[in-house]
Image (cartoon, rainbow over all chains, first blue to last red; front, side, top):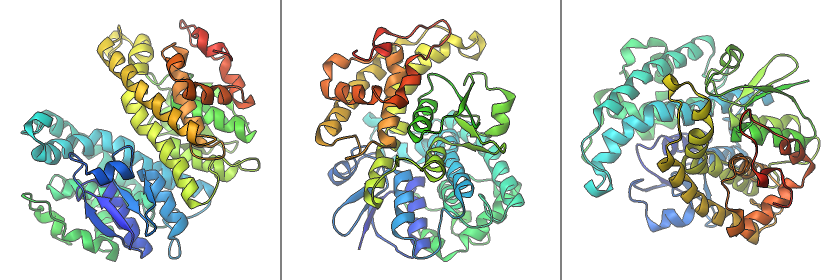
Length: 227
Length: 227
């Protein structure tokens, strides 16, 4: 069975778990800690980043965009996650890239680094108490992103158009990692919340509901389907 | 004729100029300044980032990964820039992503922000003299990247395999922006230099040789084919 090297609260790893489940081709999960990469990980991906998929023949695929496209080309017996014509596919990829760069830089990186990663790092690596200024700024920018997600979800069936796509999984992966620590103000953004509820009810999401990180129990909203 | 909103020394814009030339479908270039985006740009791409392609019917495609895939799907009458089977294509995209995230964060962003962008920004926007600590750190990390590029180019015909690909254009786009300001130590990295020379000799690269940025003449190595 293929293996997916991942970290539970890494948004890029979460997207690939969701994608593999949507394609109906799950992989065995191998836990990694981004702040202390194993020798295996460094060998499999020179960039040292998660996630990495290792196929049964030992070949490794890394790079989150590369892996998303690779799964679409090799696992697409079922539904496509980059559906439609070239324009529609460009919109899926634009939004996926939006989450990977803009959302990550503005929200996920500061919030998750400060509140999760630094908690597990040794002090000499930069571990310690979260820098709350960075967290507050990230959570403030999160509101604009939830607003944008709500606007997209109101005008379309899914974020990139009529069909569920990699863009929805990318957004859900980022948001759910932040929801794990209870920092998504769902009540203030009903359209984004309704979109996320639909995603969260899909069978592909179910395995993520029982995620747990040592010493950090999930927030109430994370485990609750009617959050 | 389609239009490409770009900035001369933006590595992502440069890659798309090279790609459009390789496909044999050039676009009219519209100059933008990343530190002072026009209203047009903000309307065409909510992320405000370059490059953006505007098709003859007015539709816009943005997001550098999205645009790369879109061109491959709509301009691939000639040679493919994401060639081969799913594995080979994953390697093209892994390396492209390597340049877009790792090389950009470690080298291109600090060097180009400090030595180019801050020069043109108003003081109240953060403009001013370059922070040389950031530049020096970036140029130090550049050496490891040139070493990696050299190793790839020694073992393969092009960076991702037997054929020229988007990965070569991504690398060349980043490196040539830094070469414009004369900061690539080519002499110390003969394998990377030989690879770059082959790229620089291609017809697709020719229009870039006469690039010029107001008040910043190109380095000697930039304009010279036998640098």
